[in-house]
Structure formats: structure tokens, C-alpha cells
Amino acid sequence: MIFRDGLFQGSVIAITGAGTGIGRTTAIALASLGADVSLAGRHIGTLQETACKVEKLGRKALVVPTNIRNPEEVNHFAEATYQHYGKVDVLINNAGGQFIQNSLNLSPNGWKAVVDLNLNGTFYCCQAFGRMMCQQGHGNIINMSAVVFETGSPGMAHSAAARAAVVNLTKTLALELAPSGVRVNCISPGPIASEGFIHELPSSQYDETIQRIPLGRMGTLDEAASVIVFLASEASSFMNGEVVIVDGGTRLRGAMSFLTD
Ligand SMILES: CCCCC/C=C/C(=O)SCCNC(=O)CCNC(=O)[C@H](O)C(C)(C)COP(=O)(O)OP(=O)(O)OC[C@H]1O[C@@H](n2cnc3c(N)ncnc32)[C@H](O)[C@@H]1OP(=O)(O)O
Ligand SMILES: NC(=O)C1=CN([C@@H]2O[C@H](COP(=O)(O)OP(=O)(O)OC[C@H]3O[C@@H](n4cnc5c(N)ncnc54)[C@H](OP(=O)(O)O)[C@@H]3O)[C@@H](O)[C@H]2O)C=CC1
Image 1 (cartoon, protein in one colour):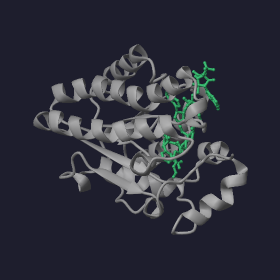
Image 2 (cartoon, rainbow, N blue to C red; image 1 turned 120 degrees about the vertical axis):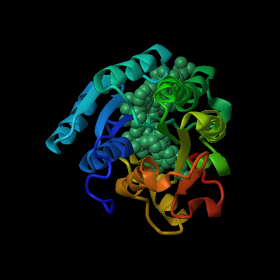
Image 3 (cartoon, rainbow, N blue to C red; image 1 turned 180 degrees about the vertical axis):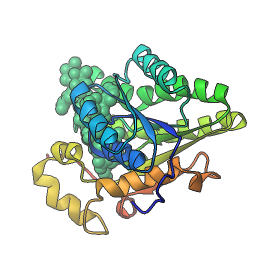
Image 4 (tube, rainbow, N blue to C red; image 1 turned 180 degrees about the horizontal axis):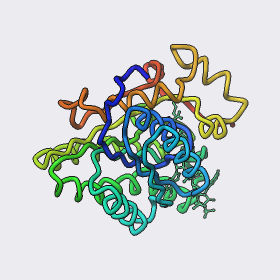
């Protein structure tokens, strides 16, 4: 990490999807820079593994198993975090995902599950933590989109639509919450070599995906996490309602299809 030691000393940071991939890497990076963290996700086992790593760095970690598709569980995540730490400086809405399917074959429930996760879940978290941040008079929310928000993406209609909505939600919240001292930004990654992405990507598409990335490789977990760390830090203090694209230039080549037939 190129950030200075102790950058987040005294900060409390809540992260969703913190048991794996970009969320886990970000939580550990922030803890290594001094932050105490509150970790959410559905699976307690992976969250506890992240918590162990955070505690080995000498920082505190609260584990709150949460399905962000459920607004009551999200409210509990926010309340438990505030009760435990007394404040939250930054919320990172990292949890998300989808499955690849042709639009015409998507079931209503499949569409709903992905929109619920990526858009509604993000909104519930923004609302629950945003209320508390506005009361405390400061805060910083970082949402997760995906580069497909801009290009569209065959095989990802549900996710691309939800990610575009997250960008718009970010802008509206940036305007609504700014007078209360809360800023809201968004990161939009392209292909990042997380286990989740590699697992979801049909193996027959691996080589083609790499070829489509102008930098000739997928981004690393650290390369996604370091942009989130920047947005979480005061180095970005005059950024609000912004979308930071981290895709090695992938979007410049247009929409990427994930369909195999
Ligand atoms: C240019 C680069 C762009 C990169 C863009 C983004 C990349 C990434 O996001 S990388 C992160 C990768 N990680 C994931 O995507 C997580 C893996 N996905 C999932 O865990 C799931 O797909 C889910 C979380 C999105 C939803 O699963 P789940 O909670 O288990 O869903 P339900 O059991 O509630 O089922 C609801 C509904 O959805 C249908 N469904 C679920 N998974 C699939 C599937 N793999 N294929 C087809 N359909 C699926 C399921 O059948 C249900 O529908 P009905 O059967 O009609 O009830
Ligand atoms: N890797 C990439 O190329 C890109 C990734 N992204 C996005 O970045 C984020 C992190 O992805 P990445 O690290 O790659 O992949 P992962 O699959 O490792 O991360 C997804 C995380 O979301 C959590 N999650 C899923 N559903 C829920 C839910 N209902 N409630 C709470 N948590 C949930 C998962 O934990 P659990 O299963 O325990 O709930 C998991 O930790 C995701 O939003 C992803 O869509 C965006 C663009 C590109």
C-alpha cells in the first residue's frame, strides 16, 4: 500500500461483502492503515477469517452476518455498528454480484434477486448508515458499480441495469446528503481477478476477456482496493457524486459479452 501509516487511525469503517475478494482486501488494507472495521456479508465463516486478519494487525473487527437484500438485517448491521463503535466514518457498499444469462431466459425471480442485491441492497445500506451519518454530522459512502453500467453487457442485463441505477443513486444521494457533511461516491471496476469473477466467468471466455482489456491483464484485488482506500481517505475530500472507473481501459472497447452461445 502506498498510503501513509496511520492514515485511518481512529476511523471506523463498515464494509459489505467483506469476507471475500475486493471487500476482504479493502478491509485488510484499511486495517493496516489504522481503521477499525465492521464486516457484513451472508457467510459468517469468511467474515470471521477477515476479522482474524484485521485483529492480527492490531485493529478491531465487528462481524455482523447480513443479507443486504433484507432491509431489517441492514438496519441491524447499522445499529450494531453504531452501538459497538459509537460512530461510523465510512461505509463501503461492496457486496454484489450476478449470474450470466440471456435476458430472454431470465426468470422474474432471477431478475429480482440481482436487482435486489446490487441496487436495493445498496440503497438500504445507504439509507440506514446515511441517517446515522447525517445525525453525527459527517460521513463518507462509497458505492460499488461495474463498468457495464456505461456500456451494457450481453448476459448481464439485470446487473448492468442495477449498476447504472447505483451510479444515479450515488449522484442523487451526493446532493441530498452533502449539506449534512456526508459525501457519496462510486467505484466502477472492470475485470478484476477476484475468485468470484473467475468462478463466474465461463472458462471458454477467459482468453477472450484478457484480450479485450487494453492493459492485457485483469486488475488485481489490490488495484481495486487502493482506489476504494483513496475514496475513503481525505485525499478525496472534494469529490462528491463521482464515479471512478478502474478497468484498464476496457470500456473504451465497448460492451463485453458474457454469453457463451
Ligand atoms: C467488463 C467486466 C464486468 C464485470 C462485471 C461484474 C463482475 C462481478 O460482479 S465479479 C463478482 C462475482 N461474484 C458474483 O457474481 C457472486 C456470484 N453470484 C451469486 O452468488 C448469485 O448469482 C446471486 C447472489 C446474484 C443470486 O443468487 P442467490 O442469492 O443464491 O439467488 P436465489 O437463490 O435467491 O435465486 C434467485 C433467482 O435467481 C436464479 N439464479 C440464481 N443463480 C443463478 C444462476 N447461476 N443461473 C441462473 N439462475 C440463477 C434462481 O434460479 C432464482 O430464480 P428462480 O429459479 O426463478 O426462482
Ligand atoms: N471482480 C470484478 O471484475 C468486478 C466486481 N464488481 C463488484 O465488486 C464487488 C466485489 O466483487 P468481487 O470481490 O469481485 O467478488 P466476490 O464474489 O468475492 O464478492 C461479492 C461479495 O458480496 C457478498 N454478497 C453477495 N450477496 C450478498 C448479500 N445478499 N448480502 C450481503 N453480502 C452479499 C458476498 O459474500 P457472501 O456470499 O458471504 O454474502 C461476497 O463477499 C461486487 O459488488 C462485484 O459485483 C464490479 C465490477 C467488476
